[in-house]
Amino acid sequence: MSFLRIVLALLVCVAPVSGAAPILANAVLARVNEAIITKKDLENRLAPDASFLQSQYAANPETFTQKLRELQEKYLDELVEEQLILHEFKTAGFVLPETYIEDMVQKDIQTYGDRLTFTKTLQAQGLTFESYKERVRKSAVLREMRRHNLPQDPLISPHKIEVYYVENRANFRVEDQIKLRMIVLPSRLGEQGLDTGRLAAEIISKLKAGVPFAELARIYSQSTQASEGGDWGWVERSVLREDLAEPAFSLKPGELSGVITAADGSYILLVEGVIPAHTKSLPEVRDEIETNLKAIEMKRLHDKWIERLKTKSLVRYY
Image (cartoon, rainbow, N blue to C red; front, side, top):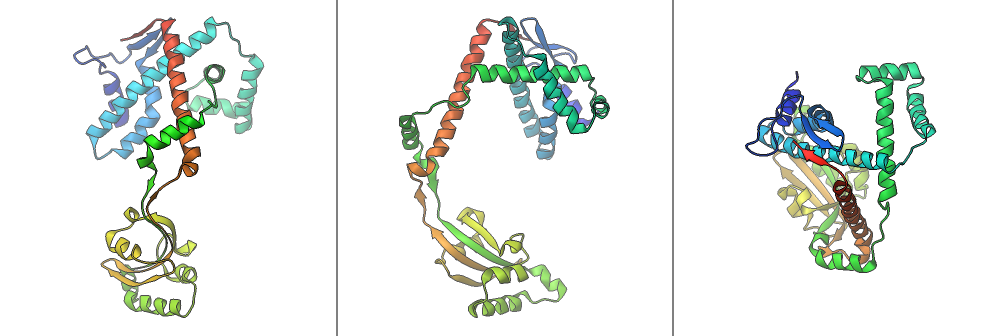
């Protein structure tokens, strides 16, 4: 058993209520009407994200455990929600045509070339063809029920957008920005017999003679932006190290920095444009605000729908 599986098992076996008895490895975690949600169901839902968390917080096990517990609570609620929706589909007498399910299955089979290859792929994942088909059916029901009960594009009034803008103006504050190009000559070039200071001086001479900065950056620069002519795009001060930020943000559009010598090499900067710090106007952020408000409204309607389903169902956590 892998370390991750052990951690998952331990977490899921811990009761959510402090002081409660531990949950057994094969225990029921929740019941929704006649459906049950087991420890195994939750572990299967957790596994993909848990693998990512394990790699992200490998050096911080306490944070890893905390994040995993948060996912446990989130996904258990999701599993309960899904059973509520499936129960509503069944009791309301909705039906999905079998041809609809078959069409979805056939599209998946075509992806793998033929049914035999697809079946072997399922077997390698521990699935039978029937269990896979049932998973497709469940996903289709959940998708169609959400589409039927929730608006896909809720209407947001101009007034709400304006109020949101006024109340959140600080979030639309933009710091000073410069459009920056950079030639980087790392000190490790010295190991190849190159004098970075002398090379930088030669580049400055060529720039003053009219050779385009982008052309010289492609030839000499050792940064990842070299192939783009040393173009960093629009950057804020926080993006740069202080020893580079200070000279960069003192330049005017079209000005060169000269050679900046640092412990790790030499740098030449060109500022192509400057945008002073400012607050974005409402027209600039209207679409962004509308998108945020739509997401908020959709979540509100979703939560209201789920709460309504709970009032018609038996939901119990163990």
